[in-house]
Image 1 (spheres, rainbow, N blue to C red):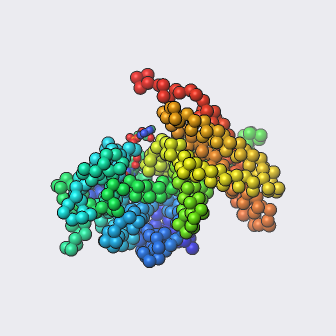
Image 2 (cartoon, rainbow, N blue to C red):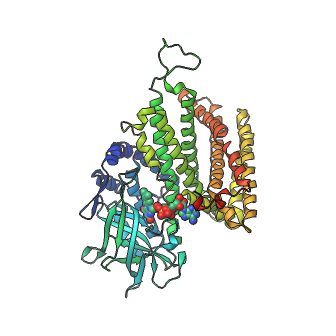
Image 3 (spheres, protein in one colour):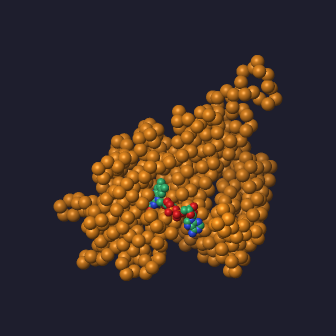
Length: 562
Ligand SMILES: Cc1cc2nc3c(=O)[nH]c(=O)nc-3n(C[C@H](O)[C@H](O)[C@H](O)COP(=O)(O)OP(=O)(O)OC[C@H]3O[C@@H](n4cnc5c(N)ncnc54)[C@H](O)[C@@H]3O)c2cc1C
């Protein structure tokens, strides 16, 4: 029911605006960002239907929707119109921070209008000199006479939905440093900084001004703003939780947002895959290699092996990614309801795989959307088809919510050693379990063969991890120099695991008596698993070879040699 409801809104409200929102990007007019007029109705609808707080508890007006289901619904919205989907889900993340760490007064003052879609929520972290390195933010907070209220001064850039006219107010969840606090990340605190603050006289301007709107490469329907806080020293911020703990609170939102970004990428990749698939089924061009008779009609391009390769590439990446993302949703749900060892296991697995769930789809869907453009040939390069838009929209995902480089450092530098390597042990045990299941299935001998391939890949990951961890104490630069390649190796292996799981289920279904359409669906799954093991997993051999090498080209190369 939830997914059907999501599909209806996606079909009726979001998809029809996909191209229009791309062609009519937000404009800054008289200090206010104007967005597509359809966004107002979309925000209200998301609010009225309870999508913004769907996963929150009944007592808070939520629906206690499992994260897994919510993420699947979000995937549908994102595939329909990524720009439009950004507004409500940013609000969800911001409201979640207030309800998790804010005082009851903050919760009562700000969240109801965020839940109903009238007020926008944002995350305001980035500054001109502090992007990847948040410890360098300089926005300041000065205590006032009232406890918990501070004067905010500074500027933030690239703030998604940071100002627009589809909502009545904007609530920024902003990172700033309290004057006199510790240096670096330990001195960062979190504040609610409304564009208009709530007073007994109603809403009053809070000295937050919009200095500019950026012109982006893709998802042009959602604005990113350059904001000034406290230019007239009249900007008030309300402390969330305790002083100096802001970054750890913000990590909650960022971790959710990271799985969300992976989902966005997979959703855009999926939209491009289906558009290119439809085209390949209709476009006649060339003749089969084995029947080149010019008097015969041309064949449809879907019959060419190379076109099928490009379709399989897309299908294997987007469906493998979706599988991992739903797996993350499940761990997130288990972490909320389970206790003891089960809770710890789910939390650690989610923590370990968040950089993969963010980065694998993000990086790979830049490539899959490119393959989708390629399938359309020249038509793919024109604005007559939506493929060029998907290609542009996919490109943001390796950049925001931590660049791929930063996630590589996070995985290798931090997550691998999490709780003495316990997270990795759980991960290995999960995969070993799937391998055992696959080997026990006799209906299709390929499953056991793929299980062996995955076992070998896993051994490579272990070997590389051991090798790199051994280097770390003497040479930390060499340890982390190729962290992005390590992330790639880990990511491909993780997605191969997801494909083995899917192949097991598909093989079981194919052993039953099922309708033709279902047979095709499951045969497609097994064929795509085959593609992944034959064409993608093999890439881990080269990556492992590089990661085990003692060559230090990237460290030794000097800036002046370029
Ligand atoms: C469309 C869009 C929406 C955004 N939305 C928001 C938002 O809502 N809120 C918000 O706060 N921010 C937002 N951002 C900002 C975004 O999170 C940052 O752009 C991102 O974190 C990268 O920071 P940067 O742009 O300063 O790049 P830099 O940090 O300057 O990075 C440049 C390059 O250097 C690499 N690099 C940097 N440091 C290291 C290192 N230590 N080791 C190895 N490599 C490194 C990076 O990987 C990258 O390739 C948005 C950005 C865009 C483009």
